[in-house]
Every structure is written in C-alpha cells, then in structure tokens.
Image (cartoon, rainbow, N blue to C red; front, side, top):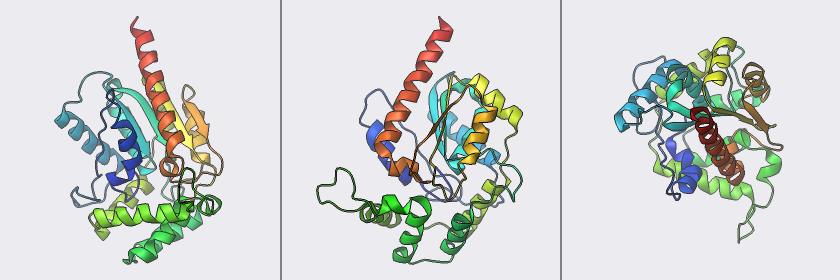
Amino acid sequence: MGLNSTSFAWSPQVDYFGRKPEFSALVFDNRGVGNSGVPRGPYSTSGMAEDVIVLLDYVGWTAKRDFHVVGVSLGGMIAQELATRIPERIISLTLAVTTPGGRPWTNLPPWKGLTSLLRLQFITDPEVKIPIILEMVFPRKWLDEQAENDPQGRLNRELATLDYRKRIELTKPQAFFGAISQMFAGLTHHVTPDRLSQISKTIPKVLILTGDEDDLVDPQNSLHLKKHMPEAELVQWEVTGHGIHVQRTDKFNALLERVFQEGRERLESKTK
C-alpha cells in the first residue's frame, strides 16, 4: 500500500479476491504505519522491500513463480525494489500510480498534493482531514457525481467520506515519525533505467497503471516507466485520480484478474 496508508486501504481488493477460492490475498502494514512498528529511520524503499521478503519467507511463499505483486504509489516503489531482489518468485507485477523516482526534488508531488500532505501532518480532527484527503486523491468531478450502483443515490463524495471515516476509526493513529520516515523513503526512491529494463525482462507479466488527474504522482512517471520497460503493458484511465483502486474498484479488480491470468499463461507457455 501507499504512503501513510494501512492495509485497510486494500479492503475492496481483499473483499473481491477473498471470495474466490483460487486466490489467497496477503496484505500488510508497511513499517511506520498501522499495526507495524515504527523503527528508527530514515526509511528507504529498498529497506521496506526487505521487510516484505521477510514476511513472504515467514508465511512460506518461497517457491519460484509463487505469487503476484500489486503496489500502489509508495507501494509501487517498494514493489520495484522487491522485483529486483526476488524476480524469480514473482508471476506478475502491477505498478499503479507510481514512479521510478530520481532526485529528491524531482520526487516531490505536484503542488496541490504536496501542500495537502503537509497540512495533514498537523491536523488531528478526522472531520477536517477527510475533505482534504478526498480532494487530494480523487478528481473533484468524480466526487460530485452520483455513485454507481448506490440504491440511495448518494454522491461519490458521501460514500468516500464514510469509507475514510471507517478507516480512521478502525486503524491505529500513525506516529508523526512514521509518517515523515515514509515520506523520506518516497523522496529518496530511485530505480535506474537498467534495473527497470531487467525487471521487465525477467517477470512474465508487468502492468503499469495510472490515471490522468493524479495530484500525488504525476502520470508522466508511468510513461517513463513504460519507456524503460518495453515488455510491460501501460494502461491509463481518464478522469481518474491517485486513489485509483478505490475510485475504479470494479475495473481495477477485473484488470488485476486479467493480469494474473496472463502472467500464469505466459509462465506456462515458457515451461512447455
């Protein structure tokens, strides 16, 4: 999962794939957030990838071509580092609304996202925080539209507010040091073109997914990923913000399912 977000943010995906007997879902809180510890920083995406490897080893997901990796935002940065370390264990890799990084000043979010993130660090009242979060991760046009398949005819903004209110109620408050340390990991992240190319060549299926109205990670970063990962598939959705897996839940889940299937098919074709 992404910056300063807990595994609760994966609820739409766990609910979907958890009902399918052919899938097992593993979600977790990165260091510095939720029920995971807040070790002394600064953090790095490479160090956070090592955390994931320890967890995978612990649960026994150690075989070759054993699982699919999905990373959103900071989680996508961690997923890139993970893919350079254990590519032989990964069937498919989905990099959503993320970046290969570079210099700290080039890793900064667009101005609206940056100012919103900074404001959120000093606000404790959930009812003040939630509107800022929604405007940061979703397009305003979508927020003010009527939600699909809602029998009460509520707006997306209303439903998203209820969702985030529930997240805040159920999750442990994040320590300030954990938030800052995760931000440092994002600012210092950098996977070189050579490493991106190697990931693209060694993992059976790679998907790069982005929206077109992202105030936290410029969609141009996905185009940069694609430039150096020629074997990867690039998908971009219109009127879609940073919270892509929540805003477009049905499309996102269906796309993941296709990617998982294509990864398995490519793997099978190589072993014949």
